[in-house]
Length: 231
Image 1 (cartoon, rainbow, N blue to C red):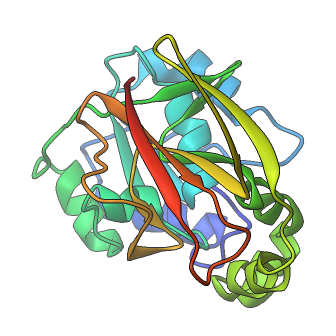
Image 2: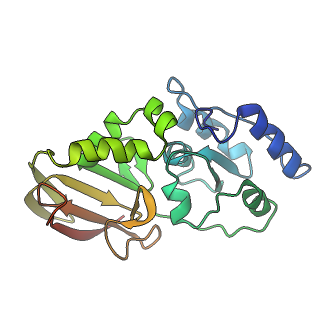
């Protein structure tokens, strides 16, 4: 559970889960914190539990899911962050009661693709250029204060003066050299909100990653190139 989310206080979440899942699960609660390696903590415990529930936004979900890659323990998601694109893309409802209903047995377990970047896993999307800068300048404090609007505020401020840089991209033995202001490696297509997509036919479970390269210096008349690679 990410306690910085405003959706649930820690005690409230624990009481809710114990009430709704009484007799079905033994609950063990972990809280995320900038000074804690939640991925390592979940990894150490995952094999002792039948399911791991991540309550928070995309960052929390990604950190928890990273501990479960290659393990049989399934991940459930209770969306509670600023953006919940991973949950939305998978069709997971935002209603906590619906999440508990799934945990009571009314759930379909699906396998999804992941990408690895160094020692980290990527579930949804990673970027260089404008995307990376936006993630860096949008702090926890801003997200708590403005919610989704924090990304829109800081995104608009930096969009029109984003520098064009040289990208060298190697995919399956091919080298692409291109100038652009943002490169995205996408496992899911939605950005910021569901329905706002960076490209068509991008799927969590098609066995491929999509590269989307934005080649113009701004949103007006901007071009993009896309390609696919096996994950």
